[in-house]
Image 1 (cartoon, helix red, strand yellow):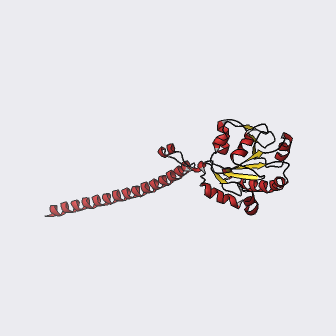
Image 2 (cartoon, one colour):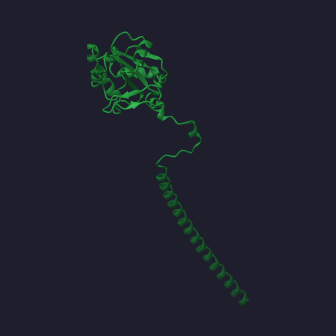
Length: 233
């Protein structure tokens, strides 16, 4: 799916209309995502009526408070407008995180032909591998809202790669950020145990020494008693 837009310039629908024109930028914003291609034009009444619905749909699915992985979705507006002024006017109605192709880019028409888009509005939904998941999801979005994204996600077998470890990491002895704290805690506990053991050992040693001294004193008294008895004899 990323291959569709490599060597192309995608523009962000923000105030500055930032251009994404490097392979790294295109891959970064489209890889491992469900992609919606929104074919529409400003002079289409149905398109204008659908825009608020699409904006609400897209806004919810890009909100981390609403969906677990908001980065798994991208929306590109494929303008079928007759003039750049029409396209600019229509873009002002669309969500600021929508991407689009510049009006002078002929690739807009190529995509229309490639996917045989004959009616507007059309929301073509693509899996991350570029295969078509839905030829036109306009009715699904209107009827089911953001719930239909869950079906797309299951059908696309989408994986959130930011939670996957690189194979190289398997060889590393990974530790969490709390390990130093735990080590200090465990070290402290070990020290306490050592101190308790040392005290007990010390007490035991002292007690043994005291017993040995008592035994030695008794032995000495016995020896002296035996000597006294022998002398009397």
